[in-house]
Image 1 (tube, rainbow, N blue to C red):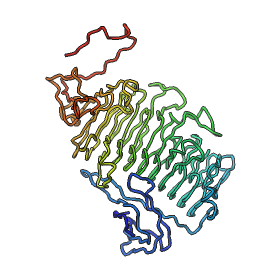
Image 2: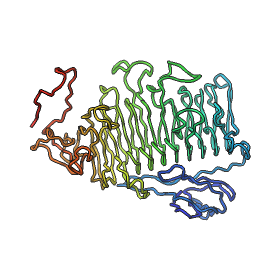
Image 3: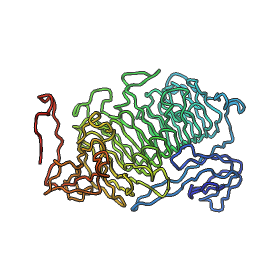
Image 4: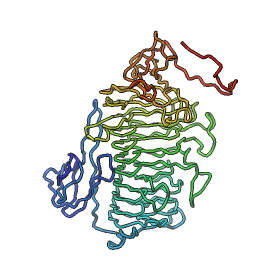
Length: 542
């Protein structure tokens, strides 16, 4: 869409020419925090006087606002225009319109012929509805099953809607193409890569709207992803995940290939990334992009890490846009040389971007966030965002992580903050003792007076390489306030940084410290100490 449509309106304005006609059925994605606010309508009129911005009319008024705007922040743009998908095709493949919905038992297409290139399947420009069979393994609307390489096969330009068990399943296939499809109202993972052995497949230009949880198959279908990706060596490009009960893109990487494809010689967690670029996720119940549990790509994926004989290989996730998600725009679990480049995030309730843990610390500098926009609130005014206390970026509970060249906008309310420390350290020392160093450079802050919120256990060490975080010059520091950190000749309290009330119950907030390069901030830890405790030892640093 090129123009916002409000509740009760009966028209939408598109942003490009279409060949749609009266009687066609469309679906308008949600644009807010609730992924199930998508709306299906039948076109009653279409005005193409302005071919580049046709106006579509329908009889039933909209129940929800659908936001459509490209916002500008300091010369950079954030595209938050609601997607619209066409569900009508001339050829319809469907289940029984009278019983399929009641029984969740629809039609399905399965292609299986063991051996590379032993079958060619080309499914194009058709409408599939009342498809997929709940509680039935392998009964998916489009299912390519245990074939091997399928260079000549594809599913493209299809509309798949009202499905009871996924939309497209890639099982034991390579080089399959899933391109420019629309999927709406899907139970369970929508685009499904099954055994963690599938590689070199191209998933591009798809629009997935309203992915719903399902109790019919895997446990993970109860927290579904519009794209469920178990092996990283696939091309995931220019897709839109527009409303999901849980996740937009879920990299649920496995230790080995599983199921019928089981092999200890396939090690997805440590395999190089194929491509993840120019994807969008919004209105997800939890995360727009989730890398879970780990991605630690190595030169030889199934061999142990070694700095010289088996070094890390960078995995670059690029140009992702994530907004209006119930938790994060993007989150990464345990990572090696994983790099988020030019991410744009806005209006997420917990964080824009979060890294939990980085591995292989000797490879200093290979895991980082580089570039992009981190926006607290946009003009897509949502009460849930204003009432929340999110962070723009939450840094990991480990060393060797960097944040550079990021632009923060609109962090100035309540206890929200542009940066939060120590991911998943809510339980204090039981999770991590904190005081891990994170490096910063090239930051800009606009309307962002709340720069840092120090989270449990309130022991972050932020090293400011160029002074863009602290405004205290090169090689300066930011850290929570503790008496032993307060060196009056080099440090001062900074109201732009604070800890929560739990850190200091007697005060509403507890401002942090910024220190010049005259001091060095370091983490000190004891291992194997004796005696068993320090209760008899007087320790004080004045």
